[in-house]
Length: 628
Ligand code: PLP
Picture 1 (tube, rainbow, N blue to C red):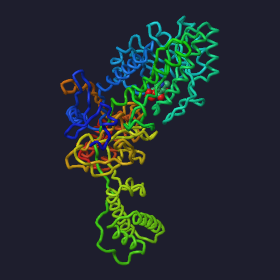
Picture 2 (tube, rainbow, N blue to C red; picture 1 turned 180 degrees about the vertical axis):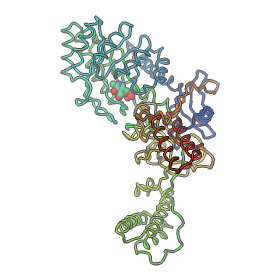
Picture 3 (tube, protein in one colour; picture 1 turned 45 degrees about the vertical axis):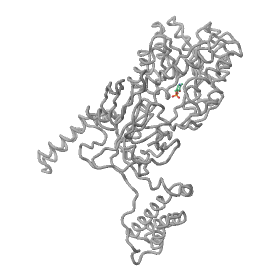
Picture 4 (cartoon, rainbow, N blue to C red; picture 1 turned 120 degrees about the horizontal axis):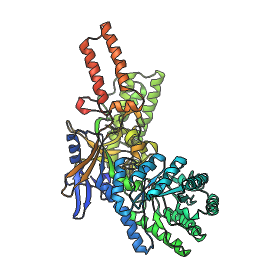
């Protein structure tokens, strides 16, 4: 069961039960409480929610907000740092109402605030923000944005406009004078220290965001000239998301702190140093400098930031700033997982083969048969020759020199040779590196009831790898190697990168399906960025969403349930009117009745089915008796 590396990436949130099930672990003062995903799936089904199912675990979100704030508090105490930490959650990482409500609820005692990057995000942040929390406004801001942010100051909201480009300053000055409201201003700097991972372009001279050093100085001078220097309270930088290396984080923080100290020494009354996002999630769980991992833990991250800021500011005799971070991914990734059922499996197994090569076969097919006989004792050379033969035979088929039946036999022979070679590799692992593609070539395809584009868009867009594993039968050794295909008619709609042990693998070990038993896989750590980035490819809509709170006695409450999009919902999103579609079909059916092609019973059956499907799910419905 440890095959899937859950003890590495599960990070106290997911564990295994003795009976081979994945459990969610919630922390209570009396100790951890675990509830199996199978129980929650059964509870969801009983409430009318089938897979695919997006599951949100309230306890895990509360734990993350608490952990982040407590870790900074501990680092501050140990370092003797003379100021505090004030976190904000960047709304773009998960804008779902429930997530924002919960972050504000759990973050209240820490004054955990919000970061908004657009007018829509500003509105939801203004309404949800806790008292004495920060509202950091990044992104480009027009007059409407600025007016609302300024007026919110009258409610006592610490709404800070972070200037991303010099062109934003005149409008902030003009509108603040028009309203006679002092703005709170931050400046976003471009830190030249570069970070690794998938978001390296976020920092450095060519980053699309932030002020160059020369622009920064110009904006400061202008604020001084306008006698608004006291409004300038925050310095902001964002090095990139998912930064794998703590040394690089340290270098970026050091540079940002140097900007802070020199501006302070010039008389700018800065109070906040905002270091943006970047705290990585260890999706692999191996604590390495890899784009899906990180070579540090949360305590290392907090300590590096606090100690570096203290060291740089102390050296220049500048008071310690309030440290702000905008951790999004690390706050919400663990709280959401996707559960989907497997509908069917395609195996690349040979069909039955004759004992002897049939007469009059072309020379190459006969040779392939000989290789098949030889492959009773498999070898790398035999497999490689069989692969070359297979490709030559395909060419000969295209030219018309080999017929369909001969090609069929040769492909079947190749599959038999490949399968024997793969079985041999299992007991001769040192040979595997000589045939790097073979395992992938022979992997089964498990068809899952979900859409990559709707639920896991980053796997398609940026090659993000998430932990994927069955939620039960983990006390049985899996006997198949697989990749996973989704329901979309798109060859990109598949998962072909997995986490095994504490590394990556192109295939996932899975169990054989059992008759009459659902086989459900979970995709974990998907709470960041996926929900709003997901789209309607092939018109697969939002899945059912269930929010669960685990209780201390081991029971769980379903605190929120949002049914999946219906087909009518997704048609409407794409500007099709369900009523008009029904009417068009009705007219066609009526014409068919007139012509005598169908009778009235058939007409009613067709239109009844159409209406029912409009209200139904976009996903595969097992209960409808369909086989893929
Ligand atoms: N702050 C800003 C300005 C960002 O652009 C981002 C995302 O890239 C974040 C915070 C969140 O970063 P992360 O999810 O790595 O914490």
